[in-house]
Length: 171
Image (spheres, helix red, strand yellow):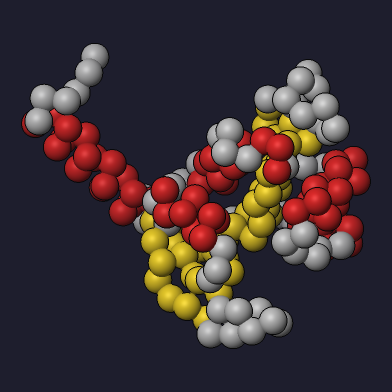
């Protein structure tokens, strides 16, 4: 598996994946706009050898807006056949690694009822900070999440210190 920036040549597979998952309805023009935006980071994960998923080399993608201290995850998707295999984590971390300053943050919104996605984001350090009532056209609420590089680093350091004090550190 390899990560690389999305190009126009990837769009047929990206659009196919989006149709497979049926979770958003971006069109080719919207993806092109993101690919060419100077503030966007569009990354894909692909199976360079074609052994993970025989149908497509594209395993997933993520699109971030990198806007200085306040970035946003616009979209992240992985093929159903490879979900829960770490690809979403690779894609998410690729964008979060672009947060360069200690006080940088990343925001996202997700359907309130999408518990699978919400657990994924919470597992990776995102915290719920607000809810937008009836945000989606079908009336569903949007759960708003925030990732703070400083808060996540602080929690990781506290966990490491606690583990060390309890004798759980391993060489």
